[in-house]
Amino acid sequence: MSIALVRNPGDGPDFRYYKNAIEQVVTSAETSGAVTVMRLTVDREDAPPLHSHSREDESWVVLSGRVRFWVGSTSLDMCDVYDAEPGAYVYGPRLVPHTFQTLTPTAELLVINNPGAVEGYFRAIGPDDARIDSEHTDVLGQYGMVLLDSPPPDQS
Image 1 (cartoon, rainbow, N blue to C red):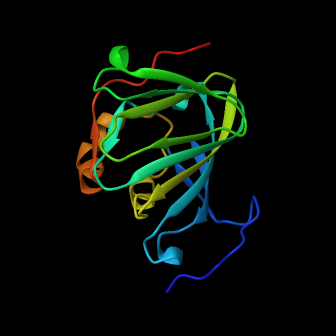
Image 2: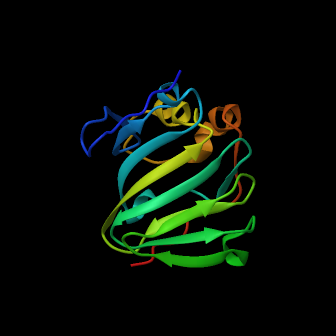
């Protein structure tokens, strides 16, 4: 059974995903599978490849920095492109291809997935200095994710 909770920044446990420290704000287990929320600080080179999720919707709240989002096509060149500033909310429904990249040196984001469980993917990959998502297609598939194109080019 899930319970109401308040978790201030820094109160959630941290784990590593590639070279990033991610704060697990709310786990899927704490919400009976309804949602998982992670807080992350990303650099420009941390952009994920264009991908889609078949099991969950994904939302982002930009806490600091500016972030560019690509959405809606299996090719970066054909995606719609949106820039999000601090306070912006971005919604990516399941099956809609998407990726993002910071436009500032770093950005802090809340990443919200519902239903939850996808946090297991990030924990399964764990720490690594080089981000090579294509080496983890088997784990991605276990969580209903598919890589569609490369990460966005550097926007600096």
